[in-house]
Image (cartoon, rainbow, N blue to C red):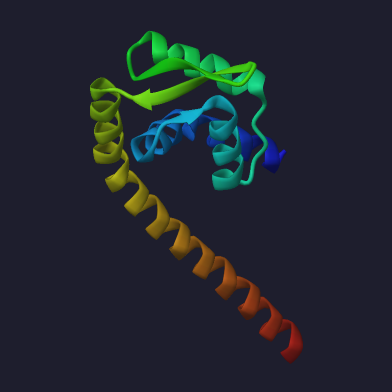
Length: 126
């Protein structure tokens, strides 16, 4: 159950992460798959990522250009001006949210720790 929730959260961050990867350099789809997995610790299937790439290309956030490598063709993706603006907007909106979220998570972790430690010390004194 918890891993399903994590998958949903991570999938929701996939598009901004893809834009961020492409901000740093052009990549082909397989590289993007690997970067997503490395960054999130979650497995991404081609059937999930490639439709995202097609959609992002269709709305102008990224462009794809076919490259011939020997007998193989692959599509190299890069971020567009529109993609840069979208990534900046994402950063603007979520930087404040994430700051508050992580502060609350840190406080929650401390609270849980204190409850556990407090309970253990209470159990020992009984």
